[in-house]
Image 1 (cartoon, rainbow, N blue to C red):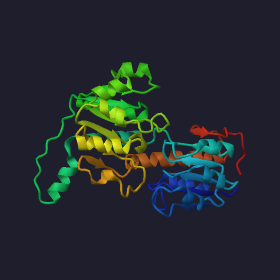
Image 2: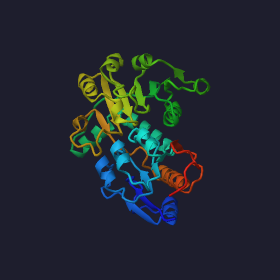
Image 3: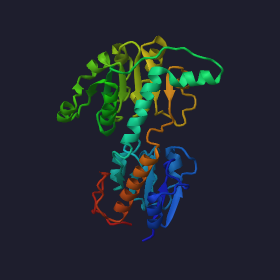
Image 4: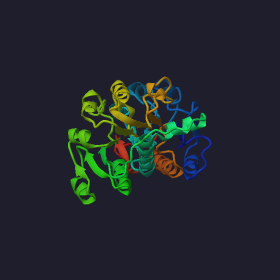
Length: 329
């Protein structure tokens, strides 16, 4: 059977030469790539789905309109990454389109980026770099993170790795997660606290929660009334965990001493107000962009897609149909 596959992740593209691409090219008869080299909006996805059997998806917006417009041939959306908040899983279920992801493939890379952003935001590294290039010799004061309290909101695969890395800085780890593995936390010496306690005590806050109705705007006016003056906040999860206006106000008032962002509501973030703020360190959603992580995500995404289209069990199926329930076609 001939298969047509759409591939949209910006770090897995027509120029990629690795094991995953070789495997995909052996399996598929036709591969279509993202022509825009950025996450796609829903209408842009729809325009590329004609005759597609499988879709390896980056950070595209795959809402109900995409699912409804998808051809009958589409059997699987294979997310290149773990996040699923941009995929309408209910709409996919109604169309019996399988959805898969790559949990844990980028965890080490994102944890590294998180520590990098914490250090950069706490010490004003990006601002100092810019000023030196302008011929200045700045002497701003930063904050040491050694021995400080690190509050981690969301203790999944990435949050756990951030906590373990922070041991090297002798940080006290406060954790908040409704689904916390308490035995693991106890073994690791992490202190479980309420969200209120974490906000009040932490000198550095790192966000690793999924985007849900409950977590949208989590760091908003009420939360920011509780934080310690000069707190450093880093977000490598989803932009919408922040209430943009409330965070901007807290930056101006000094309640937030530094902000690190690897995620945005629009990518690239044209016109985003954080672009002009000296206390903000920005990264272009590159937390998972290491050679090792992109190769792991690529091979998992390709193998997930092949498993579903071949009618085999897929260990990373997150949406119906169940493996083996539907013949490929």
